Image (tube, rainbow, N blue to C red; front, side, top):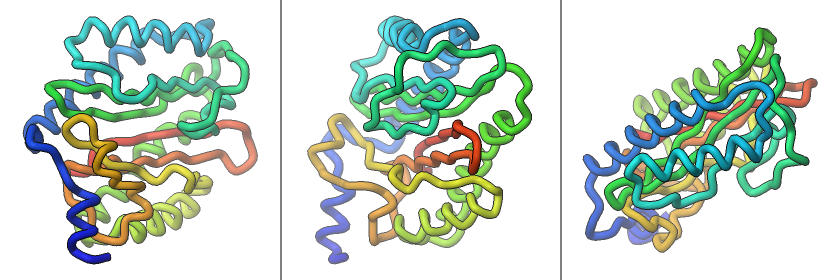
Length: 222
């Protein structure tokens, strides 16, 4: 990839600052934790999304930059672009994830994580391993300075070693000062260069090899 193409894929606007980017991410994490605290067994997926939007409106955000995504049960296997199947009720022994993208201070925060209800050991391990895989892959990027493509090849191998299946339709993406979409950065997993910190979201979505559930975790590469 030519230097000019690398620069175009990582272009930012005049408002951008690394400090503002990390502040937006921290505030987005705080918001996501507050959403998780509201989600209880017996709640429908649509009810959780509606309550989350109401909560976000009280937290001083500029705007939501991508739809609030909350998945219960089997819907944890679905990607961002896929619609949920029906409107499931969260069970007493279940799994769910949250994914929000919110603008704070003209910068885009984006994070997601998986939680469980009850005590199903495989669901609990899946949720924990999504975070553990993120940490392993994040550290590999820090230590080795690999390309986005190589990063997801590494992620796939690590996921399989843990006994899960990596969804390679989910490959991370750009963020920056809003709106990042004008820069057309593409997917992190298709990026041929070494991604710089503070500009890319690393996404990990895994699935159980035989049961109908999965887990998701994403955060900013820093």
